[in-house]
Amino acid sequence: MSQQVKIIGRGTWLDRVASEVVERDKSLGRDLSLIRVESGLGASGLPHIGSVGDAIRSYGVKMALEGLGYRSELVAFSDDLDGFRKVPAGFPEWLNDYVAHPVTRVPDPFGCHSSFGAHVGSLLRSSLDALGVEYNFMSGAEVYKKGLLNEQIKTILQNADLVGEKIKEFTGQDKYTERFPYTPICKNCGRLYTTVVTSFDAARDTVHYRCESAKIRDKVVKGCGYEGDRNITEGEGKLVWKSEFAARWAALDIRFEAYGKDIADSVKVNDWICENILKRAPPHHARYEMFQEKSGKKISKSVGNVLTPEDWLSYASAESLRLLMFKRIVGARNISIEDIPTYMDEFDELESYYFSKDRETNQLKDARLRGLYEYTVLTRAPAAPSVHVPYKQVAELAATAPEGTVVDYVTRRLVANGAVEGASPDLAKRIGWASKWAHAVALRASGPAPVNAETKLSIDARTTDALRRFADALDGCNTPDDVQAAAFDAVKKSGTTTAQFFSAVYRILVGTERGPRLGPYVIDAGRGTVREKLERALERAASAG
Image (cartoon, rainbow, N blue to C red; front, side):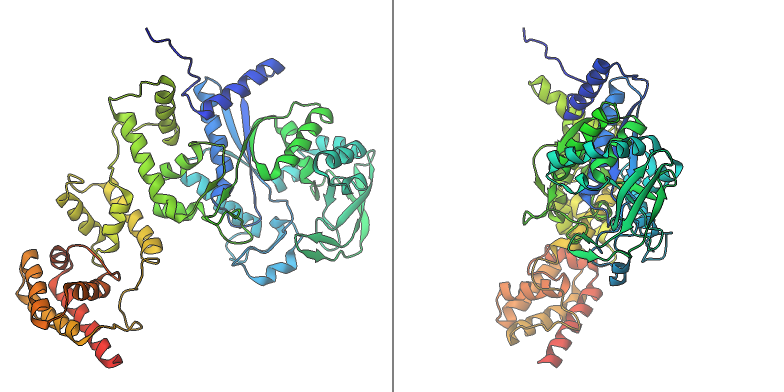
């Protein structure tokens, strides 16, 4: 008799982390009536896959906690009181005038929100909403203004010497041994980061500061020279990252937060501050690797090499993006638009397994696969699987479909091939995604573009003659077989080769060297439409020659 194995929750890494959070809180004697998990939302540039990944994974832990029987909440904390550090790629250069200003006080270059920070925050929230992530949104600027961190700020500033030494010990950064880990907004010029706090008056809750020059990224920002005081309870300043996380964790009672390895040192020092200065146990953590582009470079908002959640969701399902995040947490991964078909097909395979009667003999693997699927569909499994057709097969058909008939054309071809039984809303949605993906990626990288007014059709006289003969014969073609026969007849009478003829035809009709079977394509596209395209291309070739 096989031994029964113990499976935690649904058997995934999310369940393991959730169990660790619960067991740790029990050992600390904490109240388990509500377990809060947190995700920070950067507000300094366009959101990308990595930006939302932290929130999606934390939401996965929230679902796992709920699966274990506990009430949980995801706090999405927007860092919108952070200073504006660098103009992201593609944004107007005049934003350089606002470097070091809080992002919520930088104008929105698109004019649709109250500030740059509000604009970016809305993009992040829209992505999370589209992915079905439920969260309690908190604006950093509002949190500071409401005074929710006042107690923690005061305690950290009262222990600034010790905090500065620990920051140096954990990160190697020694500037906070000489200054306080707090940056007020300058009353005169409105900048952060250029202000250096030289003293703290605990009785009056005020910091004394000077506005000096500071190096921010690769740019030196000149301070205005102003010297004065700020009250820490006004919300006109903030803790630096090396101590702010600790304040948030303590004030908001956060029990779990994932983090990327690029801020590992900051997390270590914040853990220490939380436990030793604020006298609160820091949250449990899970560390993840960063997403990279194919060259191995880190995806960066400022550099502009980003794949945004909005991009992904215009080409693929929310389930495929959630699968990317929930599949695993360890190990670096390259990610680009070319990877979308892989995750669409992987989700199909996962769903097929979930609804199949066949089961893995390994109980742990069976549970993990079924659990991964359930988290990917947000624990709301449908009654039946959706349509499963290889994504690239749909994309290839969509790329060669006649204009204006993509869904109908691809559906007919898939039915004819036995891939689907008929049309459906799920299939139409998939065709729409794949069509956009094909035009954005596949056709862009697949050689010659469609022949148009700007593109010269370079073919020899025999192939030209064959194209004219074929165009003239189309009016008499009533079936796909008629079209095929007319094509081969034109090749034979002109003396060209089939390779040269079909290459020219497909370049004119679909913009690639190869395409779908010509007979069915012509009938679907319309004989008159195809003939008109051929004649226009031949006219341009003649005038250009």
